[in-house]
Length: 76
Image (cartoon, rainbow, N blue to C red; front, side):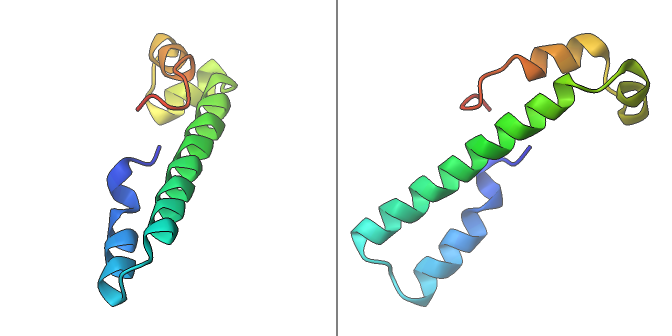
């Protein structure tokens, strides 16, 4: 999963080059949040579909994977 700080350098770089107009800055931040939510949803869905053998390969116990997969996309 991607945390909030993953996109922070990109946003900071863009802000440092030339400050964005306020509406553009808001739109960029909304786009980043939506991308994070989409990635969380996708990865949690994929985690829920792994079988016991694959979970052992990545070192995750079934109950931990189930708990993570049940979280909503907006939850970190």
